Image (cartoon, helix red, strand yellow):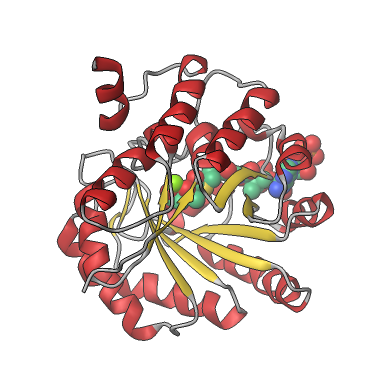
Length: 297
Ligand code: HMG
Ligand code: MG
């Protein structure tokens, strides 16, 4: 049975913008976030505390947080002790850590082996949980890695179980370079649902590099997933994952689900306004189907 209601976590201000070549002024990001909140998103990745040398676009993280925090789930990404310290100081209550199943990818992305990242994160997450923070763990290269190829689903399960043991509230399982197919999504999410506690939120994060993201969402729905990371305008991509293009577009997902009678609580017209607002500031055109339709009528 498909769910009646699905939660979309808007990742446009973070995943969407992190790989954008034009440096976007903080005031425009703040307005983008405000338009997205007006469209109805209650969970959003706002920014990340990462090295400004590695990801210059995210260097204004504290300004974004100072202007955008409210009582909703506002996630800030942090890969290490320094990032988590900065996040805690900034006043956020929802922190997203990230790690790659693929060791080679993890080294390219955060300059550490997967095992070293997990060992660094364990005491930090346990401490955050003791202090009442909401912790989300983003798990990159859960299907394919640009360097190592196909990923073993048992390796994904192991990392998910390790995070669950540390006490994380949510796992966001990602197809970083958009190579997964619907059959693989159904299989992995069925396996994870079977082994994880019912209380751990399980979210799917699809990049649409090969046009399979909507099909992957449908297959994941069939496996019992009812939370998806999506990005307004279909922006996005990890700078350290060659071949990664944008996330699945929020507006295309909202449209598909509403046509299927599944509610998301998101107003499509207001979401398109947010995409239209950010579009002229980007180095690439917005290519989502819904945005193109809007421009052609
Ligand atoms: P490093 O060079 O090994 O770091 O990079 P370090 O510990 O040696 O420190 C070097 C400098 O960075 C120092 O500053 C630190 O203070 C600073 P300096 O003394 O040279 O002036 N530094 C930091 N500054 C701000 N925030 C921090 C931080 N940590 C150190 N947290 C590091 C290691 C992790 C910092 C680097 O590799 C990095 O920033 N990586 C981030 C990569 C990234 O943001 N990737 C994209 C997000 S993940 C993603 O998109 C995937 C996802 O969407 C799911 C999917 O699709 O797969 C989530
Ligand atoms: Mg991503």
